[in-house]
Image (cartoon, rainbow, N blue to C red; front, side, top):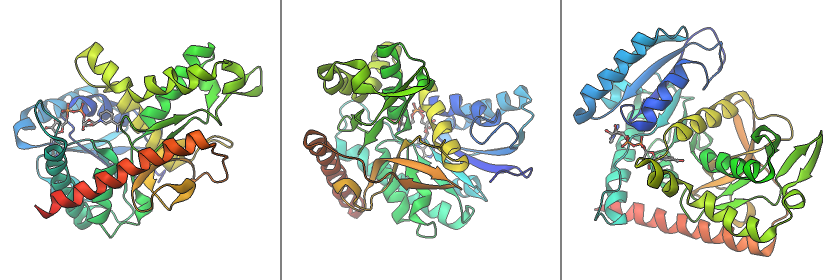
Length: 334
Ligand SMILES: NC(=O)c1ccc[n+]([C@@H]2O[C@H](COP(=O)([O-])OP(=O)(O)OC[C@H]3O[C@@H](n4cnc5c(N)ncnc54)[C@H](O)[C@@H]3O)[C@@H](O)[C@H]2O)c1
């Protein structure tokens, strides 16, 4: 994808909080590299049209050298035209008093419609990452209704959870976060996810030390640590009165950059991808696995030893995805 030709990057929900944090990162080269020109396609819905225009004006005012054009529109087909990366942030938020099923109904119909527009108008090699919740199931619906794309091109974001896990280990051990790697987020981007540090390591004076060996507190790693990562989103809302935006935007950039440019040797990251049944995960749901990326393609890391307690947690989050898929299909029938 690296070329002097600009890459067309779509952000849906671009007038929202994550969109506002994300578009300047893309225009600064954090998504695709400091030498890669981009054209931003920003989509939002009619009630947000004025705010979207405000974001467009700010992008113009920022005079980003890499930004070669901006499309700001409420027309999904116009937004999808020729895009090579699609970052799906737009969706219907859960409001007070709404049932899970109501939120699911709204979102699956949005993702079905946007899948059709991508199918018709996006570049055939377009890479898609779904951020909007329920992220895994929205991505699954998008995959089903955009069959032109190989399934490997449709992913969902669990990199924020992955980065949260690295951040917690760094805080606990006093290491720099850049010295912590190979945590895993298994399953759903929901509180059923399993943040697993059984294979994670910290670089201490040039030597990779297993996190369990360094922390020496299994009760914390299996208890508070897991809970903190699972519930970090809620903690941010409580503190900020808004949900995570800058960390979500930054993690989107990490997800796409590693996907396109590759992961460093010996490092894996977490991505929600179509399950092939690895590690006993249910097939045909979008499940978060440890992956390495090379030449624009991800591969699930194989052969990791999973203990019984972990396997139970992998199964629980997998079952939740199976249930969500069932609910999504019921919603589509209505
Ligand atoms: N996967 C993750 O790690 C992660 C992390 C944080 C937030 N999220 C999710 O990301 C989504 C966006 O969060 P936010 O804080 O930016 O929300 P937000 O409400 O600030 O922004 C959402 C934007 O989407 C727009 N929108 C709604 N329907 C749309 C449609 N059909 N097409 C295009 N745009 C549409 C809205 O007008 C709004 O501008 C939410 O679903 C949130 O739960 C996911």
